[in-house]
Amino acid sequence: MMLVSTYVAPSDVEGVGVFASEAIAKGTLIWRYEPDFDRLVPTSWLGEQTPMMQEFLQK
Image (cartoon, rainbow, N blue to C red):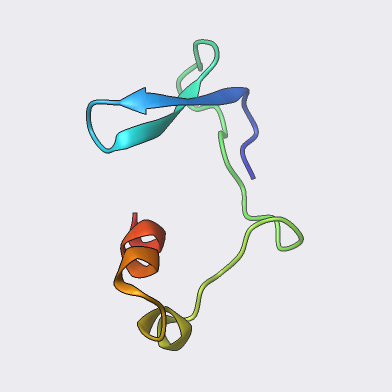
């Protein structure tokens, strides 16, 4: 789960990116795993998905 304010916008790197809404001080915690929010995708499940879904999740 992101702990800083962010937004999604076009990116020259991958087409779409997540960007900080304000400057972040060095050493600031920006993310932590939150099991009720974040999801882990098993490799076995990923291998069963369409190539488009695999590419999306791998990014």
